[in-house]
Length: 135
Length: 153
Image (cartoon, rainbow over all chains, first blue to last red; front, top):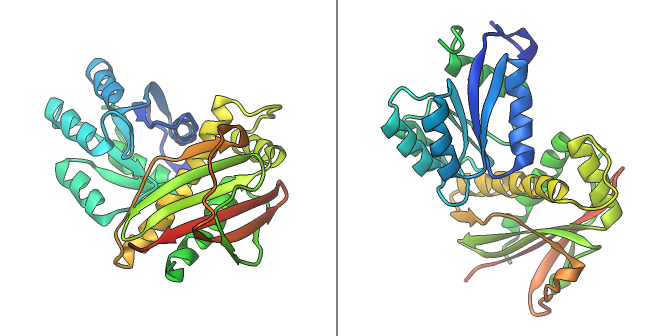
């Protein structure tokens, strides 16, 4: 069982990171890269995230809940409409239980709150992506 | 102002800052002030609505802001840039989001707006008619001040 980011199996997977903060995108990208993930796209709002999902078909999406133009929950809903097998992890500094529940019901695989512990976030990402990485 | 709102903001601020910019963050004595005010040249403001309405303002002088951003982004800044402003906003977002979550878990219902970074040049008018709590935060980067202005309707 992996106990830290350094311990997890490194299988390659392609990620789309959506957050209106460049700083936040950089932080999560560092965790992803340590796990063998590559950030193939970055979006600063929900509309961009939707467009990029459609063209990139990433293995994993890290999706901030609070974003301009189209919030994370609505973006999630539309991604799932496009691809019911999409693997999306919601990210937020706000841990509203209702919001978490709504996102999970819509099809998000998991939820991480900011500031996140890199080892915990790594564990969640690894669980969602699975040991087969991008397969 | 209901003082039970305040502690989650203070404890969350210290926890988030300690995690984002480890630097021996220590809280000073809380004082009640008439009016809301920025201390220094740079402030991040977050508006709260819901069971109470008001603002959370985290302010500091430019030198402190630059050191905080340098720690966050692991590079030196001579002036505030869009990248450094973005990093400050994200830290404020995490502080407020986590504090509001703690309050909402207690049964309150608050909503947080996206943070805004202000400088003295923005000409924000201070409001002398409101009561605020001022919480100084000391660190190796310099002093920051959290100003909490929250009231019930």
